[in-house]
Image (cartoon, rainbow, N blue to C red):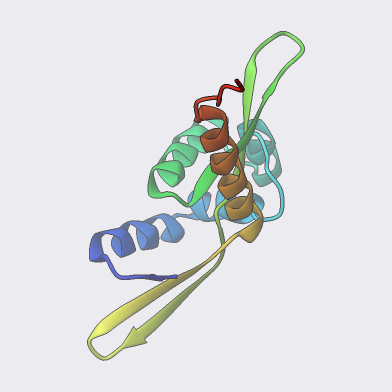
Length: 127
């Protein structure tokens, strides 16, 4: 997927240029993780991890793959990178940015949306 919008390109490059953001994306390519897991594994402050996760979610580079409930009833979000690869190509008059989606995540979201659409359809009466 080639990114054509200059504003989106700039935002993605800004986030990828940030060490914490980049490490969070890389940590969540293979499997979903909680903010606490990411913080611990990447040796990042938890508050910074949450702030960067928020920025990455806003940019569409990570997403909540699923939500778990802890034994004490608290909600825990598990985050996963929506991007598997990113390529930057410099040309004489343009910068080309292309993303290869993390197919596992894309497929899960497509299935989830499909299920939600089916569930939202009015039930047909049998007469």
